[in-house]
Each structure stands twice: as C-alpha cells, then as structure tokens.
Length: 197
Image 1 (cartoon, one colour):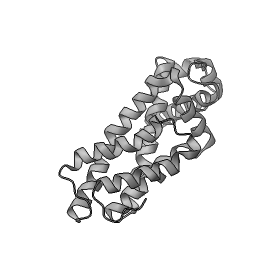
Image 2 (spheres, helix red, strand yellow):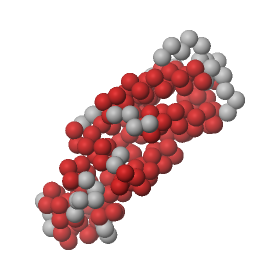
Image 3 (cartoon, helix red, strand yellow):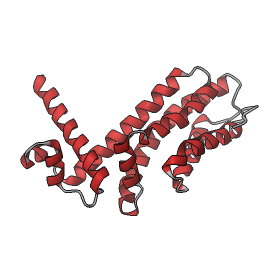
Image 4 (cartoon, rainbow, N blue to C red):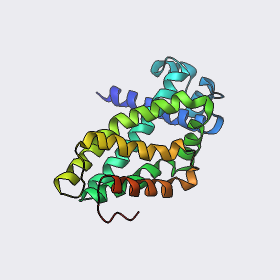
C-alpha cells in the first residue's frame, strides 16, 4: 500500500512542477525536459506517469478543476441560506488566481493558443458545478426565496452568467467584482426579492 501513496505523491510532484513550468514558460514553450528539471527527477520518471506532455497538461487542468470545485463546495457548505450560498460563489471562484503561480497559469490558459485546454477546464468545471448550483436553487425554491420551475435549468443559466464574466475578457484583477455583480443579476433572475447586488 505505501508504494501507491509514494506513486501518487510522485505524480503530484510532477503535476506541480508542470504547473509551475507552464505558468512560467507557457504551455506551448514548455518541454518535458523543463518539467523533469523543475521536479528534480530523471526524464524516464516522467514517462512512468505520463505518455506525453499533453497528458501532463491535462493533469494540471484536472487539478485546477478539483481545486476550484472543492473551494466552491467548501464555501457554499459554510453558508446556511440559499442566498448566502449563492453569494459565496464569487469568492470561491475568484480564489483560483489568488496565488502568483495560479494567476500566471490562469493567464496562460486564456491565451488563444491554449483555447482547447481552457475549454476542457471549463467543460469539466461546468459538469461538476451544475449539481451544486441546482441544489442551492432547489433549497431556495423550497424556502420560498427563489421562484423558478426547473432548478437544473436555472443552475445552467446562473453558471453561464458567471462564465460570461470570463468570456467577456474581464481582467483577472476585476474578476471578483464582476462575479459579484453577475451573482446579483442571477439572484434577481431567480426571483429573489430585495437582491440589490
């Protein structure tokens, strides 16, 4: 059993090294040699865990999605009302770029040459965040705070509105405020009385 843990730890080290290299050099300019050098391992070690650099890129994307979804779920769980849970979303989604390495990686993901990678991350996050939003909206409907007939369709709508902040090319420094504004629009669209954001 310890070998599995060691293997998982080594893979995690390689993913961390790859994320740092991609943030510094860009995905297109990074090489497997750069990644193994950053990880302090032999080139052959890389190929024990990944077949290609693209596999490492996908692992970095998966880790980013895990971090975003976990942060979002944690913040939402800390709130009690459906409105408070929805208002927790901007902070959770903004945390992604809080660390310098993450900011650089997010900026790399938004470059035109990395569009497929970005879309893969967005698709993964959307698939995983819709059920969370659906549960929040269903709670709000049950509590009489939201007025919607289909919580799942409303979840897609809210998430699309939040994603539009990014799609509009909002600078990272302005993203938290823009997400808060979009969340206020979402609350009003859900029929929340007194939503002033």
